[in-house]
Amino acid sequence: MGTPEFSVRLASTEAEVRAAQALRYAVFVEELGGGGEMVDHAAGLERDRFDPYFDHLLLHDTARPGDPVVGVYRVMRDDQARALGQFYCDDEYDLSVLRASGRRLMELGRSCLHRDYRGGAAMVHLWQALARYVQDHGIEVLFGVASFHGTDAQALAQPLSLLHARHLAPPPLRVRARAAQFQRMDLLPPEQIDRKAALLQTPALIKAYLRLGGCVGEGAWIDHAFNTTDVCLVMDTARMNARQRQLYAAPGARP
Image (tube, rainbow, N blue to C red; front, side, top):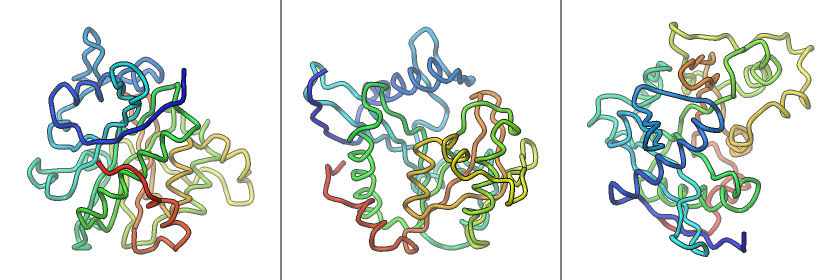
């Protein structure tokens, strides 16, 4: 594969949304063993009932024939959620504290990269485009579920306990997992947490949110359909320090 050339834009056609769903299928279904009632195995599409209400950020490699989609992010502003009647996260977390804040909210989700583009500049381009979207719409609080692979909470005791001990959201932002699949995250006492081991088990996307000043809600959610253990990450843009802002909003492509 040659040197990639990245471009980020919002999906504007059904074909572009399908391209996002095809990449999601490759990552979430084929690689990670996820599923869902609207997954189309015959067409190779990972989709759900929320897709029509989200905006879909698409990362293209314009250096490759056909300008393929190699990264995606879907985002839902609070006005879009009102049109639907809920955020995606509402099924897993009680978001009442965020709604009560009166601030502009935006949910992030379904972020993934093609396997050939991980560990390089691709995610940076998606983050930079996301930053411009946030600025354009005056978003103040970002949130969304991020996942650990697997549903065995005890196997994830180190990273979950570290998140609870070091990165629990302050009360005004502390969403809580709903009772149906609520999983305590404080599985180990603080003195038994091995920070190095915990971070090794923590997905890169979660670590990226934490570096930007993100925090987690109370409790994880066990998602058996997707074979994941979900945590809800919340990021208050007003709490980001100057260094974090520079990382998040460096010059880049505008969607």
